[in-house]
Each structure stands twice: as C-alpha cells, then as structure tokens.
Length: 240
Figure (cartoon, helix red, strand yellow):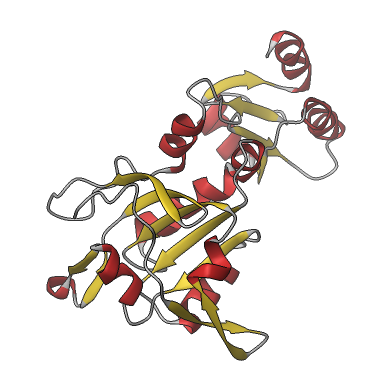
C-alpha cells in the first residue's frame, strides 16, 4: 500500500441504490468543491468495522463538521444492497456509504488486497484519508501486518490531525430504571451541559455488579463512576 498524498482521487462511477432504484454516483459529485473524510474498510458487518471504525466516525461527526469537513464517506468493496442494509442497521445518518462493488476505485488507489484466505476475495485495505476538492490532503494507512490492523485510520486520529487541541466528546453512560425521578434529573443535567449519553436499563444485580450500589441512576463518565444525580450535579459544576 502506497501513500498517494497530493494526488487526485481516481475518477470512477459508483453503482448505488436510492429509493430502491439504481443510481450512478461519480467521484466528481462526491468530492468536487468539498472537504471530505473517507474511511475505507474490509467489509460491511465485520466485527471491527461495525463495533469501532464506523461508530466512532458517527460519534465525532459534529466535531468534524466544526473543523470544516463537508461530508464523511464510508467505502468498502461490497455491493450496494449490502452497504444499504449495513447503513440502516448502524443508524448512520449523515454518513455517505459508497459501494465499490467491483473494487475499481480501491484498485486504482492501490488499496486492493487479496483476502481469499478468509473467503473474502479482493477487498479494501483499511485506511482513512482527507480529500480537499478531489485532491488527497492526508492519508492514514494501516501498517502492513497479518490480520486486520486498526491503529491509525480511526476517527480520533483524523480529528487530531485536523486539530491537535481538539477534545473528543465525553463517553457518558447512565444506568436507569422506569419511573425514577433522579434519572430524569440526571438526563436534564447532561442535556443542559450539552453532553450526549447512552442509557442502559438496569436491574438490581447489574447495578451492584458495576457500581456496588442499588439506587438509580448510576452515572459513568469516561470510565469513571460518578454516582447518582446529586453527585453528577457536583461533578458537572466543575467539569470543562
């Protein structure tokens, strides 16, 4: 795999699906006059792609937009039906999925690799790039190792390139239960702070297992146990 920063992207046409109809999309339509992040991966529905690569780009989309990125593209050597279904399952609104079904774009870019040992045939190597008006400004190519390395094409690395001082959003997890007024308070506090969170319905056993407590909510921020709503309020009062 060769770094081709400074070169124009290959001129190809992608066969996509739109409202159950075939639609041709050219690289000119995707990249012309825009600043675009592309992250490419070996296959839709595969573990790393579904659990880490795609979700993190989705999470950091507001940060990328604030840095002048017009669109984020997920590219894979899969057909349009597979990419559409994967997009739907992932709830990845705002990300453009490009099916490079024949591997034409990937091959011209020098990123087509043989994964026949896995029964995949020819697939894309994992990489990311920043494209400015059709010219490749920056590439992050995974090292040439056995397996499926995932070290440099992640969303956080791209964000750090765009802004070395950028701070990614907090990872906030709430264990809650129905009818809990303190849970409502915790969510209102987080909303006022502008922090996104993930809510997990809890049982007494799960609460004891993760926090040693039996009351709700139990709040975790960046892996740290904060406590209930009152503790969260005090924490947010000093958090930047």
